[in-house]
Structures are given as structure tokens and as C-alpha cells.
Image 1: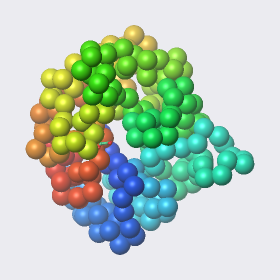
Image 2: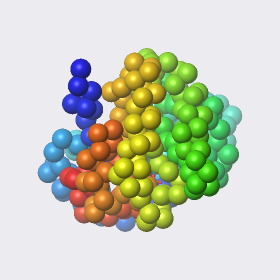
Image 3: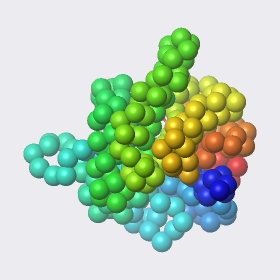
Image 4: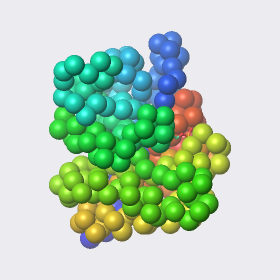
Length: 249
Ligand code: PGA
């Protein structure tokens, strides 16, 4: 089976903690206006919780889907400040990022917790986008594979039936927001490593996105790599034209 053909390209914008009602309206209008011209690539945005209603109202019926950037492991209850997967689904979310490096480093999210968030998302019918990636120090000391292996372990342990419903995103921490993207070859090396793990589980068709300073100028060369199935885009997703140029690449 040719797994490449079965992996539809996917480009997700991660707005992080940016936006206002007014700025979002302009951005969403821009994305909607041109999204239909993007062929053979799914386009989505993951937005701050308070804007899910706005994004739903704006994107409903368009080809662009949406989601959030984090989710609680709990279904409901006394968890002040948490947002459940069912709440995200209530607002039409299709996706949720879990384990973004900013959550791992700023909120001490463990590999195990990230796997639990993925389970919570799946239980509510959302697709978790599980983010993994090594720091600069880890990369410099040759630990990339072992870090990826460790981060993936509790996720892969969930088994093929659950993992097949996920998306993975390889985001080297040193490339996030730095303007210093991994080279296509560097990224492909890690993606091939991840693909081999997925293959080992019998789910090679799971999509693996690359993230970290993806822009319109470097998107095409990254997407030309056999195991890179799309991108998770931070900064460049805040400009409609730039974001859609990435999706069109
Ligand atoms: P960046 O962020 O594109 O701004 O590097 C990517 C991400 O953090 O998902």
C-alpha cells in the first residue's frame, strides 16, 4: 500500500495567545476568502478558548476547520480554569493541540499527561495533534531520537486503534518562533524516525506535521520531504495571505 497517497496534507495555524475580536474578524475573513483556492490540503486554525464561538460562527460552512490549543484530561467537575474536550466539541472544534512545547516547558506537562489529554480529546470525538520535539541542548548533545522516543512512548502505548485517530507534530523547540526552521533534511530525518515507530505499530498512515518557523518561503521544500505531511504554523498563521501561501505550497 502506498501510504503517501492516503495521507492528505494538513496545515494548522496555532494562534497561541494572540488575537482580539476585531483582529480575528479580519484574519478569518482573509482566510475564508482564499481558502477555497487551496487544493489537496486541509486547513485549520487552533485558537484561544474565548474565541472559539467567534471562529465557529465565522468558519462554519467553509472548508476551514478549527480547534483549541489545550484541553483538560477531566470530563467535568471541580477543575477551576480547565476546559473539557466536550466543551471544545460543543463549539464545533475538530482539533486540539496537546503537548505543545510551550505547555510542556511553562506548565510542566509530562509525557504521560500529554497522552491522557490525547485520550480525553479522542473520547469527545476530537483529533488530538500531539506535539513532540527536542530542545536546542538536547539536539546539540545528540539526544533527538531518544527524546522523541520518550515523548512518543506513552502515546504509542495507547495502541493502534487510538493512535490511528491522531495527528503528530514534530516541532523542534529550537525552531519555534526563532526564524530558524529545521532544514528539510533535518526534519525529514526525524519524521522518518517517527514514521518507523508508527509503522511498527501498524499505523504508518498517521499524519506527521512539521512545526517551527514555517513560512511561505520554506514550506514547499519541507513539504517535498516524503514523511512531512503538512505544518503546524505559529507566527505566520496570523497573516491570512502568508498562512494560505503555506497551505498552497
Ligand atoms: P512558529 O511556531 O511557527 O511561530 O515557529 C510554531 C508553533 O509553536 O506551533
